[in-house]
Amino acid sequence: MKTRIKEYRARINITQEELAKKVNVRRETIVFLEKGKYNPSLKLAYDVAKALNTSIDKLFIFD
Image (tube, one colour):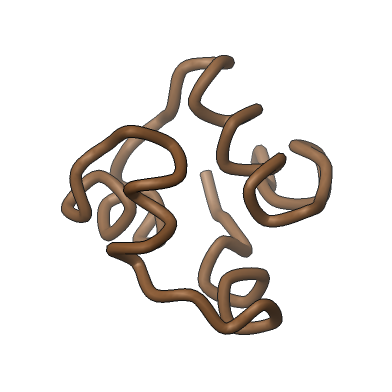
């Protein structure tokens, strides 16, 4: 799975740490999500999308 988390995070100028705090996960989780090495739960995907002001389908690319 690929993600556009880094791109959307850059648009609103927040760090991985700030995003992690918004969605109640560790920064490492955000790192793994951005690298496509972690498949989030539906709740986490929703929380990340909401924090980045976008939708799940725009943020996550399922191949």
